[in-house]
Structures are given as C-alpha cells and as structure tokens.
Image 1 (cartoon, rainbow, N blue to C red):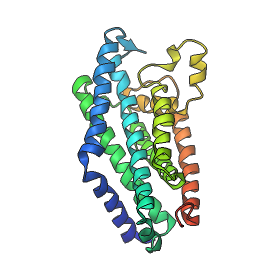
Image 2 (image 1 turned 45 degrees about the vertical axis):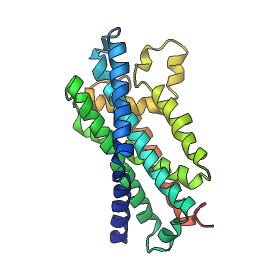
Image 3 (image 1 turned 180 degrees about the vertical axis):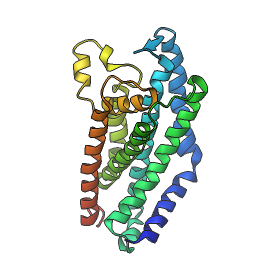
Length: 253
C-alpha cells in the first residue's frame, strides 16, 4: 500500500476545504444553529418535552446528524467532480495510487469536514442545553460511521454525475427531505396514521434515533437498527466505490 501517497491525498483534501472555512465550516454551522434557535425556541414554547426529554435537547442529535451527512457528502462529491471537469483527475489516475488509496484519501478528507461541522454544532448546542452524552461508544460509532457512509455516497455520486445539477440533486431532493422527515424535529412515534407507518421506511429515522440514543440515552427504536442500516450501506457503498475506481467508471475518457 502506498501510504505516503494516501496521506498526501488526505492532507490535500483537508487543506482544500480549510482554505475556505467560511464556506465549508462556518456556513453550515450557522445554518444548523439557526435551525436550533428558530425551530427549537419556537416549538419548545408549545412542546416542552418529547418522551421525557426537553425539546431543545431532543433536536440536538438530529441537527448534528444533518450537519455531518450533508458536509461529508458535499466534500467528497464536489472534490472528485471538480477534478473531473477540470481535467486534473488524470494526475491521480497516473499516480502510483490504487483504488484503496484513492478511496481512503477522498473519504478521509470528507469525514474530517463532516465531523468538524458535527462537533462544532454539538458545542454550540451545549451552550443552550448543556453537554449530553449517555453512551460514548454508541455516539462515536454513529458519528464516525455516518460521516463514512455519506462520504462514500458523495464519491459515488461524483463518479456518476456529468453535470453540476446531478451533483446537487442528491442533497437537495433526496438527503434533505429524508433527513427532515426522519424525526429531527419530532418523534415519528407521535405522528398520526398512516404517516407514522410510512416514516418507518425512511432509513434516516433509524440513524437519527441511534445517535439520539447514544447522546440522550433513549430513542423510539433500538440503536441496533440504525447501526445495522449504516453498516449495510457502508459495506455496499465501499464495494461499489472500489469496483468503480478500479474500472475507472466515468473517470477515464
């Protein structure tokens, strides 16, 4: 394994998003903070608790998940896609880097960005609700695996996409609706029928609830469900990404 090349690509990916921290870190942090303030304080005046948890504390895990998923996806997808349209991808393809090293470099940088935004969101929320961490191991599992899975999905989207519109399709029309309808601001158990049953087919519900269990100690579903979904997605997406990189799918012209 070319560890030097892999570390170099990883460092390049981290430096790439750290050159514009206002756009890549501060902007999403402000957005999630506004969600917390606007939704949290406007709804908490009517809904004091959800399942025995203060409403402001209840929405924190979902907002952290939202920040991690969006930024991990955007970092890997934008990085690879820009190298494709600029024609600089050939420099990586001719370098002594195998599919595993390319994958680790791109995914590692995207994970760092997602986790930085997620942890900073958590820190801001702690100013309002205090620091909540009931199960450190479960929380770390969901934070790390969520950033890994959505980094992979971003990489796959970039390999498939041929236009900027195709890249923006997934976060705008797939990820954002599924996340907002995934119990970030409410408990799906409290939805009326048939919406409570329909919500059970949304995988984001179980991911958010798994992180909620790790941070708050309780959730509407077993964290094993969310963990199993993330593990399954991680295995499938890793396999697809390695096969696509090895074959040069839409990377070699």
